[in-house]
Amino acid sequence: MMYDRVEAPPASRTDFVLESIKEAILNGKLKPGQALVETDLAATLNVSKTPVREALKTLAGSGLVVMSPYKGAAVRTVDAAMAASVYDVRMLVEPEALRRAILLGASFDEAALALEDVSDLARRSLANRRFHRALYAGCGNPLMIQILDGLRDQAALITVAGWGICPTWDDEAAEHRAILAAAVQGKGDLAFELLRRHIQTFADRVVEELPDGVR
Image (tube, rainbow, N blue to C red; front, side, top):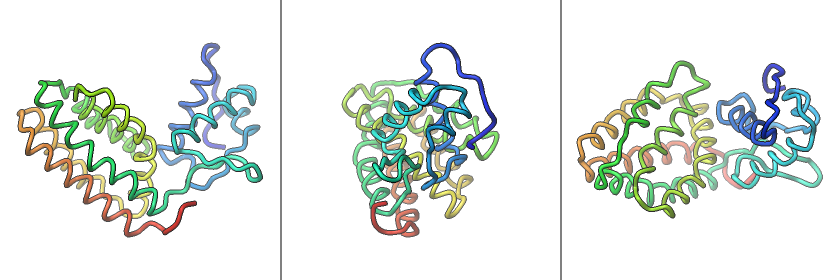
């Protein structure tokens, strides 16, 4: 069971279940490879199996869950191939999206707020996820945002796995502050390079340590 039994709100039960399971995966309460049993999740979240089934299908589409006709659903296991693919795209798109956001005079207040939300280990992955989105959200290109949004969940899952291998949050937090400072000061080229280096460094370390092959 992923956490204490909770009461589902009467409206949008599928969304409630979706966000509950996603948060449990991204904060590490549900571990990579862990089976996601519909009856257990339904009992924990006090809902029927139908919204759980729909939520798991959505999570499978975003890359957080794998579905097997024989084994059922499970939290996706992070491997080197997955991490390399996700971070390759991020390095190509995210720094440029940040540079464009700076050129357009976007606000980075949300990014600053995300840096403050690190009260415990369980929230760090979620805060990291919000921080990076806040950097590129103002780039002015809906397709770039859509591409990066599509990678957010998988990137967060890789982050959790990376911190499990080597907890480097303090170093990354310092890098985040430097990136944000450059963005706020309107230094687009510097912010671009700091973010590219930040993503590259994490990817190199994690890909080297993760198992090969797609799970």
